[in-house]
Image (cartoon, rainbow, N blue to C red; front, side):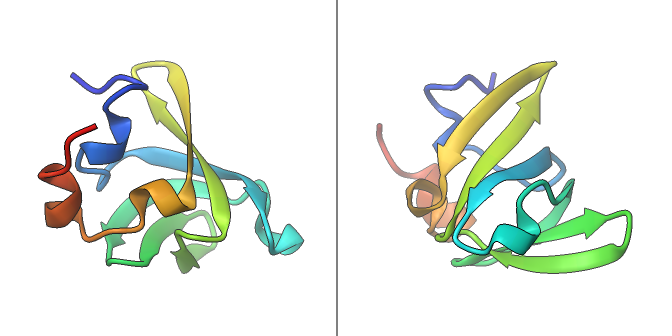
Length: 88
């Protein structure tokens, strides 16, 4: 089960997300479903198509089971399989 305490180590593909703060003010509020991820990027499926957004420079809001979980980009800036083996 995904909780706010263990969200950073879970698989994120398929989750709904939104950028709640960013060094790039033009993308604040951008939202969509995570289609894929790399070490440093999340690929979002938005209403305007796919967008590649850097993890590091943003504060991310994830929606899991009707809850909002907020994480900073540097906390999730790893490959998914490296993150899964991380202990909190």
